Amino acid sequence: MNKIKNKIRFSSVLILLLMMGCDSYVELEPRGEISSNYFNSEEEYEKALIGAYDMLQITFWNTLSATMASDDIIAGGDPSNEDQPTLQRIDKMGQTQEDNNQLRDIWGFMYAGINRANYILEFKDKTAFSGRDEIIAQAYFLRAYFTFELAKWFGDIPLSTEKRDGVERILNKRTFVGEEYTINRVGSIAAVYSLIEEDLKEAIVNLPESQVEKYEITKGAAQALLGKIYLYHGKFDNSKFSKAAVVFNQVINSAKYQLADYNVLFTPAGENGVEAVFEIQYTNVEGASWACIQCSEGNYMPKFNAPRDFSNATYMNGWGFSLPTQALFNAFKSGDKRRDVTILDLRGETTYALSRENTGFFTKKYLPTKIDEADRNGSDPLNFQNNYRSIRYADVLLMQAEAVVQSGGASGEVSLNKVRARAFGNSSHDFPYNGESNLLDAIYAERRVELAGEGHRFFDLVRTGRAKTAFDAYNSSKASNANAINYVENKNEIFPIPLVELELANAVARWGQNPGY
Image 1 (cartoon, one colour):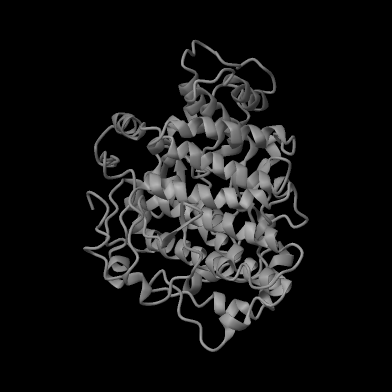
Image 2 (cartoon, rainbow, N blue to C red):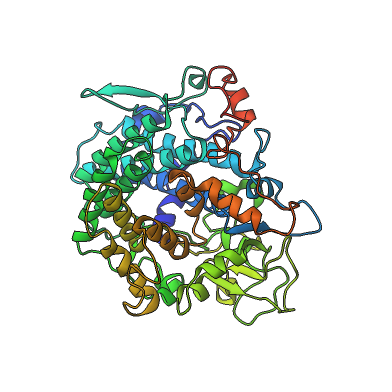
């Protein structure tokens, strides 16, 4: 990852690419002749591409917020004050359109990422050279990824579109100040998924099976993301499930990926390993600060996840967020090695300060170690180098199993059983295990424990229509209603567009707020 950072540090295009309005999601109009005079060489295309990749690092906010939105993780934090109020409200499904912080950052920076990808795509035909098609393919993937993040969080989002080759696609053009006043929502979340699918199809054609640089997108990553979009789209169009099964099979049949040792998977030694389909790279070579959160090259999640005032030989102390529930702990079967990798059990310990709604459990996959502390630059505790495993091979296997079952295919349990065999070290928990009868339910249960603490659970519940049941079960397990999750159907499946963004775009009436907010 250091190579990508060194390229950015000395890149003349970085100044342009950082000119993203922090008070709006649009990019400021570049001054001078930089737009028309740029993209004259392979090096300039590569520098612009690195600028687009750089926006992936801010998605730690997406992951952290999504983790707390689920029924399995409590926000936590300092119990003596309203620590990170937006995260606290997301945790209880009490978010409002006035909430800024994380929700506004997700909105603004994902659009900034789209703009950076569009900057490349706008000039994709300007200069010919060997390898240009692959660079353009990576830009299509990145635009699809940022757009998908927005769709998961906000539903039917505003995008500029055009019809090319008889198909509606996202417009390959940046949005400048003033132009946001004419952009409208796409029309439905299903239509947004269709646009994302077209970008990924464009990307897959020209992406290689492997890359020299770990951060660069491969064909398998684009295929896996396309299959994931098909699964989400399947909520509105059942025919998408069979398409998902086909593309997941392509990833599996490539024989490029395999399940890694789960005990090593979330350590530094496990980064960019055989299970990594798409991994977001972080580095600790530069300090970061709250004054410019988008300037961070590091991952903030580890500091959030670590126990407060923690005295431990291995792990650092942190801010005490992301507390697994007892229900999640109990969801792991006896002998499942994933539980102790996923959850740090401090019940009965006096080595840390209690968090709000303390459970005694902490999310372990992204905890900062003392080695991280010794190797970190800068005084602000925000720049950790823990990579985020955005798409793992185990995730692909479980999504493939789900797609097979949803499309009426046979042998959906094959991929499920591969994941379980890794977890238990043998085939003793193959489906059907211990009275299981519904394969789809078994796959969903497996996703819960396999991917716990990685930001997938909430969106899995929403896309499969199981959110209300899960949150009702959470509330029924509580002794009182004091800390209930107030999930409301037909509202809390998505989040409110930050009111300030609606007002800045003069779109309060034109876009309308998401229902219920």
